Image 1 (cartoon, rainbow, N blue to C red):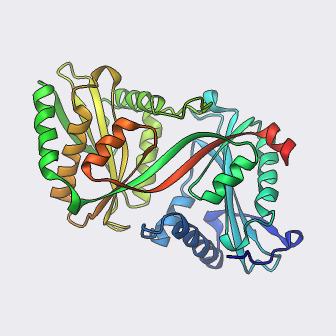
Image 2: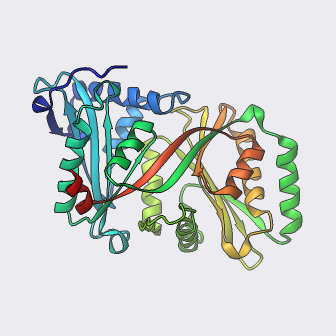
Image 3: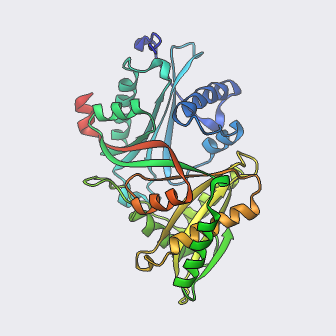
Length: 357
């Protein structure tokens, strides 16, 4: 489709403060946001608008976040772009290892692309991030046009995430039960414990395991991805609070060795008010020295039984995994997950980017 006419000299960029936004601004935001979501994920149902507003107004303790709304002209009648960018706050446990890395998201209405607006906004964001002492920034895109745009300006591809869906009606329960039986047989003395929210029991050890699993997550060969995720009890509790404010419940299973050590975990989060038919998977993994015993399959299979027995409105699971993570994709394939979207993750070097711009 031919892009709609755009005069870059008339573009108006306004700061967006979600907690102060009028209903008119929210209406403009939701209309564009839902158009962008449908383009990227046509099979997904939109989240309720009230929950989207809750998400954007939640105060992030670890990140400085700045948001812009981009209008076609100074009448501010037609919203055609949404931007956000930022970096880690100095007091955050993430700061020391990630202080040179920023992040940015740039979304443009498909009717107004390929006319220089993305380039104009990218340059503006890059200057802002440089003022914030960032040398690099991360960006991701589910759009083929976004991938081309990033590559045009020298972005380094660091990861490709595949979003997959499993309709619960398609689950092979015979296979699931085999995995549970095999897991118990190969892990004598291991128990599976469950809890809602941020369990205080073994909290420090739990966060250390999450940090370790994140550090071992596969990235592309020759990728120079350097951002390091670090979990602490405080950050974990804040994540739980973030979910609670959006009416989501966090449910976790973890495997406990006979020694009392945590060897693996799997998470889901779900809402009985916002898309109750959709169950979102969180982190799943097994500590390296406990792998090869079927623990990951046992945890996933046990979680499926929990969903079947306790969440009658659930219809499908959503998960996202690295495209090159063959072991987990193999498990997902055997369970019946089917891919429906790819998200490309990039890293941009700010000085090199500004030379090109």
